[in-house]
Image: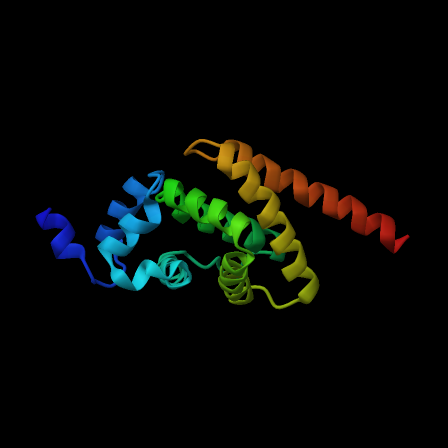
Length: 168
């Protein structure tokens, strides 16, 4: 009980995030979340704070990499950070399926992330579509993300074949 009182109304941080991740699959998740911080009675505010917090943790790929390697590294880096809070990430994803406003918030932060290291609109579109596919593989993948990395690699192969077909 004391732990909840200490965390109540505090800004989202790693300690609070760990606690929230533990209760993510609870039937009364939103109620428990707002008990931890009454600001989060508005789930949109929680998603924004969550995205802001993880944005500060995700490593941006090196400028020296090829565009394809930047996209690969960027996706893996984001999913790796999300893996630390997988229960919570999946809860947000499930809630976003019920309320499209949540997807728009998440999308805004994904776009900001990709724009930080990708300049071309075509490459942004590639990154976004590969990310969506990789995320859906990641949901079922384990911590080492072998299936996710393979899916990203296969996505690049398919896109490259498609691009070469269009150029002919």
